[in-house]
Length: 224
Length: 285
Image (cartoon, rainbow over all chains, first blue to last red):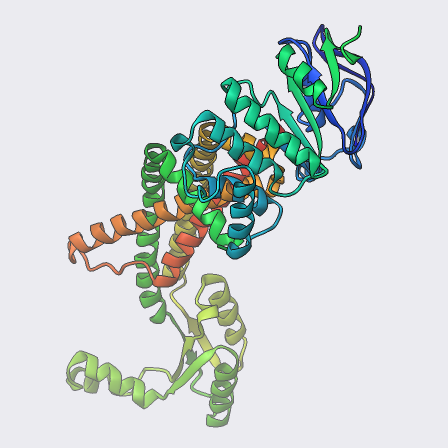
């Protein structure tokens, strides 16, 4: 599903990822644990092809970094679901419009289909009947549920979650993790980043694969 | 909601979101477009005056006294077929007309013999109403055996043509300057829109929007801003025209085809300005 082969990412003299070779298989729930500045964000930006590696190759599904045109970046992202730490919901639109954006980008324009799929996905994440609520009317936990709904509405094979509990209280964070496990159980590959050690340990205990990122290098199972 | 309605709604949402910027852009574009509108109004009225004068342009072919009736009839038929409407005026008809203009034939009686030649008056078709064509036709007719002399008021025809050419050049120059101004204003508006809506564009790009999907609402916004500015400019122009109320001279307003073309050209420039601004957008995402 994801394959990084000898990937190095530099910003000037600073090395964010150093000759990383790493693979996530289909159906895995992989947790990447690392401190701030360890290279997590660089890793995610490579997976969404917001940037291309300085050297090496990134493969996500059938998309390979060396052969990506600008138009193909959009095509890659349409096969992914992304959950952001700060939710990235559009504040001036209700949940229907926030989630419909993804479906319209996919080419779905029929109002009846949009309504059905959005109502279904909101029910799935525990926000039934809230399609017309605006983000400002929701708690942080509810906003992240909406973020998950937007990420999974097109049924992607891979969901990338960038510190999805970072701005949530523990109870809301646990609820989001439960939600992501439910999504995983339905067959979706999950790659989640966090800087929270206890949370990463709990996820490992629930069966997730743990990878630690430190100074631009990846260590399987947290072992250096 | 279909795709086009969605992009228009998104463009309108964007314009409303930064309405002070939108208002400033529309006002400054309307000012620039009003300048070209004034020139167009002047041109429309000048062209009307020129066409009135042009209707009076004719070529007069004076015939030799020796010209036979068959020769004259054949020449009239050829001129009718090739250049416009030819009317033969006999020596007697010319004499009668001259007498009418003088208000009596007392003086003419003193002259004795009718000194006026027979002639053919040629009203030219529109495509020949310019100096070069008239000169060419006059030269050709002057070589006819039945023809004594050809006159067509060459100097004032040349001046009318020069005036019309000057007007066209002036319109082109003002049009180019205003068009560049519109392009720059629209491009800057869209650039500022991109900055103001950076978060939205980033989110759209991250959830898979193609460059075309990102650009479409911004292109529509550029067109809408330019069209609204053009309509405002036309409204201001119509207001100014109405307030003149025939002073100092009666003016006609822009023909509706010109007004439509004016709005269409503004829309095209709006699209061009937006494209100019958006060359860099998809690269950033």
